[in-house]
Length: 112
Image 1: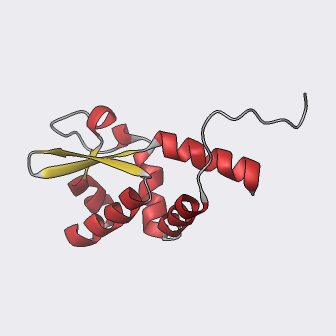
Image 2 (image 1 turned 45 degrees about the horizontal axis):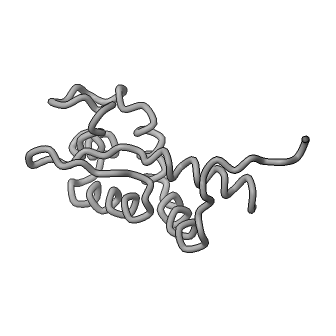
């Protein structure tokens, strides 16, 4: 039936949606989310980026910011549930949270 959208995930609630839009409202954080879509595009690291995520030092380098600024960017993305961190030794690696991104897409399609 045309015009009916089958729900695959649970849409984001208003609080979650607000946090996501706030996180993506910063051009640098939006760029980071785009970069993380293809983790193989980052330099090699001790554990495969496709499995554990991209090391913060590579995100920092690509963004051209200090370590503390990169950490702050990633903390905002993490609080919005857009990325998931994995600590390996002294480094934190980040992956996109594709489930949250799918929920965002569905929320936009259904409610906006």
